[in-house]
Length: 147
Image (cartoon, rainbow, N blue to C red; front, side):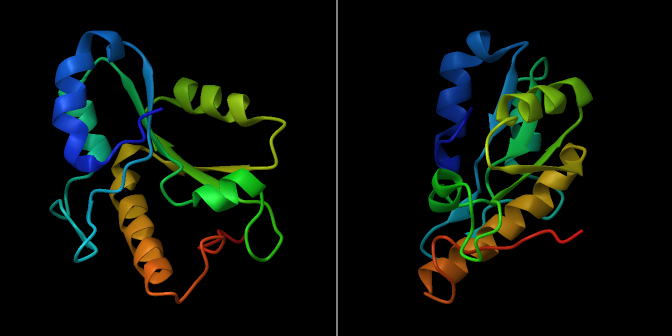
């Protein structure tokens, strides 16, 4: 699980590349400038794609970046419904492994597609955080996928 500020990516991957190689890495990062709440990457890039380029032999899964710590801890969102965890990655086996690890928890796991979807997940995470810090929604709020 990689839950570090985006600005630490280069240092972390340089230091731990050998240990992270050939592993499943769950990336919860939102590449945001927290002063302006703007994404730090161009529209065709995501932190997860950058991570994949830096550690090509790892299976990268973008997850947990659109669910707040409050909701994850409670297992529910402000509306009392289960907290949702979106995940995106190119390895079906890695995504199944993450879903299995969360099996039995109150969290609803939703496969959002391949790693290219990480960019949209990061944009959604950015919007959610901006709205929370602007006090438009609570830290137990957020977005929900409705089936």
